[in-house]
Image (tube, rainbow, N blue to C red; front, side, top):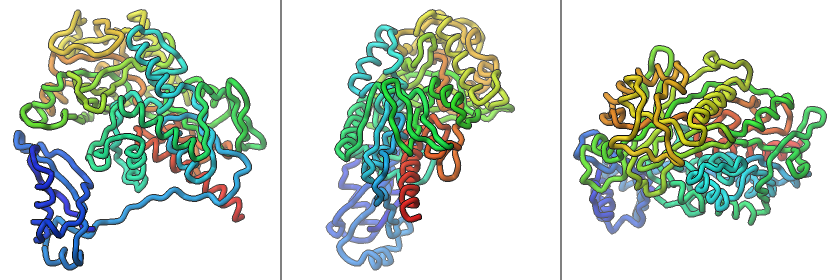
Length: 528
């Protein structure tokens, strides 16, 4: 296979043009190309409104590819590199089945690797299956009646199921391609295999996670819903199983993939003597603009057949960094609470991203030295305090909201203007300075106008701020060694909740690595 980079096409191009351009660059006829595979697709809007689609493709040819490549003299082309991941096989008959606590991205892909390896994992998930969970979440959005065990945070697929479903990550890892292939096999669109910024969408993820679960079960695994872990079973410094609300589950290998919102589990771990530490995280608000405004700014036009535009902005201030996170083109701001009396927001998009508004978190970086509470759970306590204050302001799960122009002037808002807030079950107009800590409001007032200089319309006076956004990442890290085990041998903290990931892909990779560590440990015990 020959890989050709940087093939530029107009947005409205015939798919055959890509093949003809590849042939032209290699100085061959199109008939010599047996197969063309898109490896990467991105949008180049640097010279707006002349927006281009940029491709990297692999082509299989009739003839000697090395000779064709040399004859073409094409500097964009080279022999395609081989990147391949294969799940390791476990040749050992395990004395006990490994247990995976949590069925978000980390737990799901850890369980999938263990199942493919033949180890028949048992997954314990405190929430419900995706179909039931979806009904509970929609009921919450409509009425404000929360199910504390099955919500946006807890249940099959984890918090990522009710998000934009972004699958891009800053890490370079051969497992990435394999993970994307599993998503496609489970029902996601094939374009996630090559889009520079792949996303699935919450509506598609709901079915994808169920299909992955069925595959785990078909391979001998087991998934138990409505099963919250309440304690650890230990002996001589080693894990021997976990206590759930229903029964004890015994195992010598437990992957702890609890997610960043399992606060009762963090407290249980602290009581159990598991070593943890406070880690930096961020809090802030959700901002909403008209998607058409963002499209016009990013593309220079609204007339081309282009996907809804996204953005990513960062401003480094004197003492903190303000940045956008989890940007949802054509999306919705959603109620993401998992506890009574605590209000939190998040963002979500469907696969088609066809909503009227764009939204993103605007977060202020926070370090343990900033936390008003000491100890490993100090940041978590600060999150809770802010969520409780927001809930108390409205006396319900209706979220505090303010127009950007009013926020910058420190004046309370009384209603929406051109941007209608999408948050359900509704907003309460206010002055967010009455709710958010001064450190956060001061940083936001400084950063928002600066960000608008980079992206006109981002901080327009009519843009809407909805608060609080508190759970962008875990404020806690569960310590582990190079073998991925905690001080309690056999306990493998993994994913976002353990403080080692920051999104669907990085959490999935972390879960896979923990599963591989268990396989290696079992193989080593046998060989030893």
